[in-house]
Amino acid sequence: MNILVTGGAGYIGAHTVVELQNAGHEVVVIDNLSNSSENMLRQVSKITGKKVTFHKVDIRDSQALDEIMKLYWFDCCVHFAGLKAVGESVMKPLAYYQNNVAGTLTLLEALSRHGCANLIFSSSATVYGQPKELPITEACPTGGITNPYGWTKCMIEQILMDLYRAEPAWNVALLRYFNPAGAHESGLIGERPRGIPTNLMPYIARVAAGRLPELQVFGNDYDTGDGTGVRDYIHVVDLALGHVKALRVMEQKGGLAVYNLGRGEGCSVLEMVHAFEQVNEVVVPYVIKARRPGDVAACYADPSKAERELGWKARLSIEDMCRSAWQWQKNQGKGSD
Ligand code: NAD
Ligand code: UFG
Image (tube, rainbow, N blue to C red; front, side, top):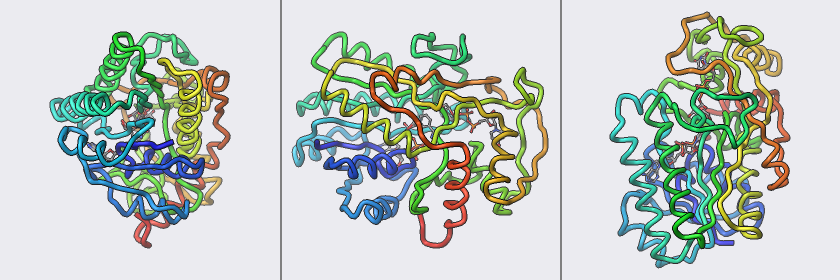
């Protein structure tokens, strides 16, 4: 199939482009490079041995989207483009609503104009807010979100559900990612947070590399096994493969569907620290700090719907995530971008 990948130069997008190309799809990437660089796509080409067609386009630019869609015919759009920093979204809500929500509307209108009505959307477990049940199924209510970033995901989901209701010719997959971590086993692509990371895994990797002094563990008084926050970490390559499966099922069955993409297993902050130390034979100094505002105690998926309907199941372990994240961290500054 011919696939338009928005935000394909980013962390999850680049890993997905690898798996789409490996599965034989033709991929065109558009990205405004606001949080990535074109070099990521050169690294993708090294992995797959195939050229990645790239255009520097902002999804809010309706004219530029028209030009791309006149150049190529797309069977489906896999839509990653968006701003994703939770803390920044609290400081700059308008920028987040503008980029993520308005950008998606502009993209959907362009896709409509050019006859592409198939979309896979990067949603997030954040739409569940304070989860009402654990593990979280897709039937769990959404809302009660504590930051504008999370609301942009919720609003876009609503827009897509309304669109599908009004125009059932659309096929939409809402993929709710749990906590993506790790990097490609080649060590050529991975996550490059701007400045000091806010997510756990890249922070741990930088501490292990001696580039940050210590990890701050946000709270050890949660109602969890060891008192630290529990999340469902999923290897980014497993996540990428979930998109390939969703694409196939969408082609066969169509309609609108929501899937949790997680491993279905909770891992605490301290369990992750210890796994990273053990697998990579490094030391990760940490201090216990106060809880981070907006954090939930535990969040993990029931991913059985994706297994049943998509034939997808995460295969890679916490150890695989720790190993590949460390490999990627060590490659930084050695030509990998
Ligand atoms: P990322 O920042 O690495 O990738 C996003 C890409 O989109 C970047 O390359 C950026 O330059 C591009 N982009 C942003 N705004 C754009 C615009 N207006 N026009 C064109 N390109 C634009 O982030 P990621 O971790 O790869 O996340 C990909 C998607 O998955 C995002 O929508 C994110 O919200 C979602 N998601 C991420 C996580 C996570 O923890 N990483 C969890 C759940 C959902
Ligand atoms: N944590 C620390 N210290 C740190 C960073 C994180 O103790 O320096 C803890 C957090 O308190 C939490 C856990 O590690 O308990 C995971 O935190 P992350 O920031 O890595 O991830 P979140 O679960 O807060 O959020 C992430 C993404 C969101 C996304 C969500 C669900 O940042 O965008 O996963 O997919 F919505």
